[in-house]
Image (tube, rainbow, N blue to C red; front, top):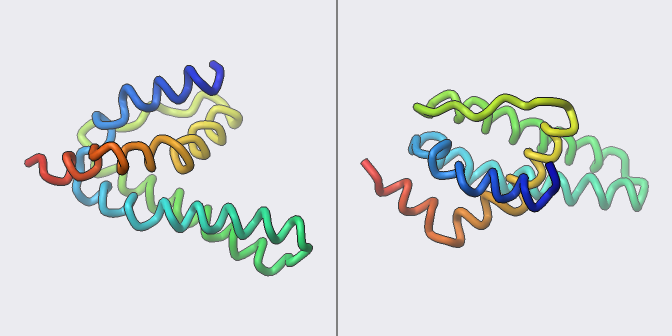
Length: 115
């Protein structure tokens, strides 16, 4: 599945997999942690700041772990990963594109208001 197809697939099911207020609140706080960790890791690799790189990697791992715990609160569990490449692709696309799009489109707020 190409990036465009994966993004379409994620977007089409996103609101179905993100209805729990606990999960939504976790995402709104920990997705930025993932993004900051990702940026820190890239900068650390370029500049050779290994301690910052490890901190960035730890932030990313913590963010994904917390999101995984949040997804356990959902009535509809996420689709399992089919391979390591599928896992990495889905995680990075969700963090950088799909979740920010969900927030900016009003989907996050709508889901928070839904009983």
